[in-house]
Length: 327
Image 1 (cartoon, helix red, strand yellow):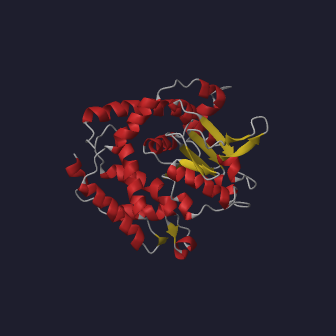
Image 2: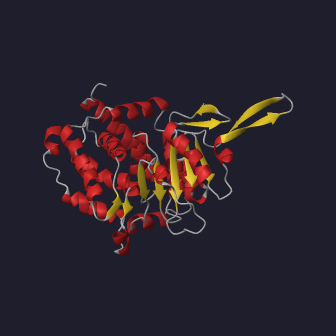
């Protein structure tokens, strides 16, 4: 694979900036979340989106699909949702006397899995195959999904009754866990003063900014962003720090390191660089790693979060000279 050139990186930066601007015009006051979700799409990962009701989780998914000009579908995950409701099934047609395939909502490009932790593990497992392999199995037959298949799954951190906690194998399939917080005062004031402008009206105002060729090119070029050995060693040092930390009973896996570099490549591309620097890694470490770590009992008793532990580790692990060789 040939290395990415500076000119190619600058072209990608302009394209990504245009997409980001269109999404942020719709999802007010959530710039960091908008950029994180777009980064995950370019890095060919999936997103676990967390936030209280009303901060724009569904709107962000719809705005992303609209800006990328991709098909969008939403599934409300409930306790009675079955795998067939998600992936589809074969139904016998008396007229043709044949079994016909009725595809489920997973056959789309951007899938919003709303409140994913409210559905039973069996249905969660069906989504896991789709996320991991971009395919599903119906009656023993493999069915390929869209090459742009991208899952945004939401969780409500305030509601725990009647939920099914996601197993580690499921959460590990999400590239990023993104937290949407309340918008800042100025952004929220602007939203309040927007009058009768509804989310639906703002969505229709989005100009389609990308076609399939552009999206394919962005993903292909992100894979070609250079990662020098010093940066890789920095990632390794972070992984090892999570495994040694007394505040964690489960550290980051080798897969987590690969995903961190994948996200860092996409982040570097959005910045117009053809190489990764340590700052790319540091900025993506929390959303890539927070859902892959398990706090120790002592840390939980102390009221620490995964972000608290990661913040301390990022301060402790020396970047050394990783950035100098990259430039």
